[in-house]
Length: 120
Image (cartoon, rainbow, N blue to C red; front, side, top):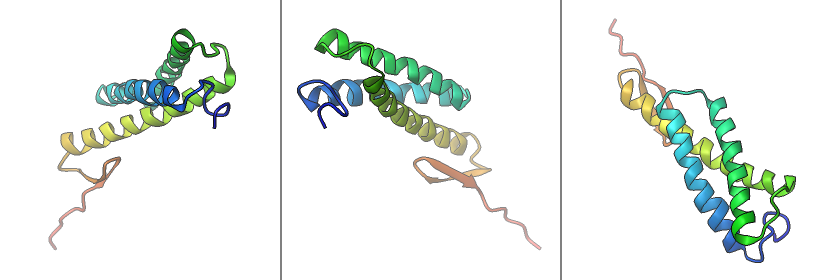
């Protein structure tokens, strides 16, 4: 895995910087975009910028390669997945709390329309 997903001598640096720090920032970015009712494409723009910041942390603190398309893509994929999950989680929560008469949760990331109760 070393050389494919991360360039540092230890996977723990990759997990700490990209998954924990970058992932936490991505989750909060997804949350912020969702609760302010912004569209998903704006999240993608912010997360690509965040992935560049994660790459810079690898470079500045641990001697990683700054301008590496390969490792930027790995960081971006991790950040995009976690950010999209955060967006979807909070959007589902938002839809089912603000419009509880219309929607019900189907899980942590989904919702559906409530069945209409018609008598007749």
